[in-house]
Length: 180
Image (cartoon, rainbow, N blue to C red; front, side, top):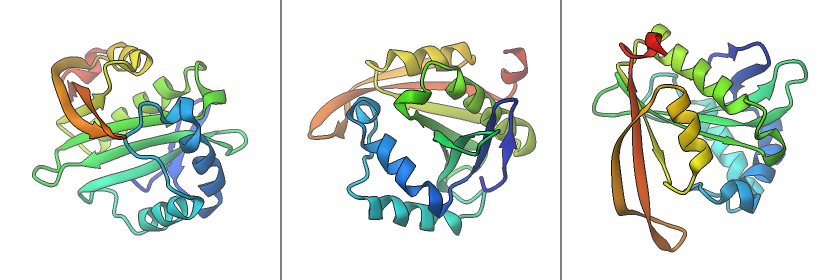
C-alpha cells in the first residue's frame, strides 16, 4: 500500500523517515501500546521498519504500514497496517493505532473506512479480517460500526508481553461492504 488515500480530514500515505520520532512516541506510550503486540525497542527500530517499508510493493504478501496524517498539516496521528495473506492475496488483515491525543476524534474510523474502500474496490480484495484483544472495547466498537462481524474468540491463543492473551477475530466481505 504505497499509494496515498485522501479523506476530508486525513492523508493516508507511506511512512517517511521524518515520521520516526512521532511513531516512536505514540508506539512507546503505555496507554497506546497496551493492546499492541509490537512495541518498538528503540527509535532505531522504528527507523529500520520505515526503511523496510520503503521497498515494499503494495500487493506483496506481509505487512504494509500507512501513516495517518492530518490532511491540512501532514502531521502524523497514527498508522494503519495491512497484511496481504501469502496463501491468498485476495485476503487481508488490518490493524490501526492512533496517538493518544488523536483518539476520540473519529480519525481511526475515517482511516479504516478509507483503507477498506481502497482494498475492496481498487484492489478487489475479497475478505478483510482484524485481530483484537477482547479488552480493547473501543477498537471492537469501531470494527462493529464499520460492519465487521465477530467470527471467533480464541482463548489464550497469543503470547504477548509475557502472558497468554485472548484474541477476537472480526471480518467483513467485499460483497457486504457496500451495504454498510
